Length: 149
Image (tube, rainbow, N blue to C red; front, side, top):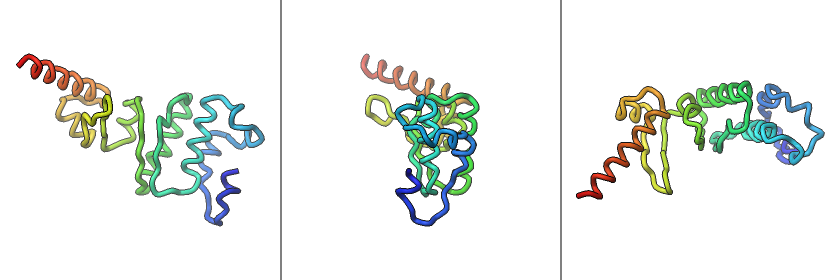
């Protein structure tokens, strides 16, 4: 349907459709699909039209391990091709592999806005999840000290 709506003659990227074997489900309605399959359809649609900027919200949520790796490889490939990808996620281990820059927002306030490597250096951690945890603990400690003064 989306291909038909956007008939502009430009080639489409069906790599994820093939990798996720979604062609088997062309006759099914979206609301009848499982959450994981809907996530695969959404990811496939995001990459279908070669957009220069992609915004992905929790792209690996609900996916099985094989599908997570397929999607990660696609994201990394597109990044190497020069596309700008903005990814929101609570799964920090995914971001550790996929992102170079990070904006960490807590309770509506920016807590960190810099490179992931800089955060790891600042916190002496090697994994993003641990670095963010250390950052949060440092901020909590600073806040408690400030309150006491």
